[in-house]
Length: 101
Image 1 (cartoon, rainbow, N blue to C red):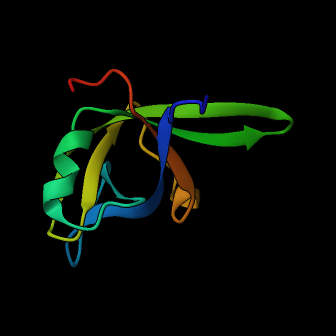
Image 2 (cartoon, rainbow, N blue to C red):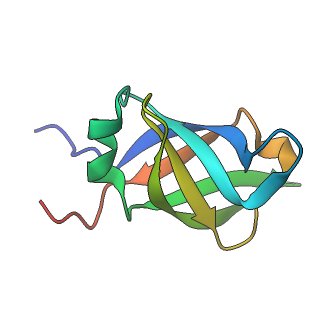
């Protein structure tokens, strides 16, 4: 029996921004296997975890997916503490539980 999938990998793209202003309270994420805006609906409200290391210890910053961003499957997420710029390009885990389906 195969173990169920508990999370989907995503990539941190950066902060929501305009030409002159960055908004660190809203982070853009690209999720694996999500390429169109219609596929993002399932992930809205799901919890996101960014794991990083401090010395030998692992820590994480939790957040939630809030809405879609554009038409290419990118989503916006809001974290408890804003992600640091070192996280750009890093992976995050989008937890698939609890699910309304």
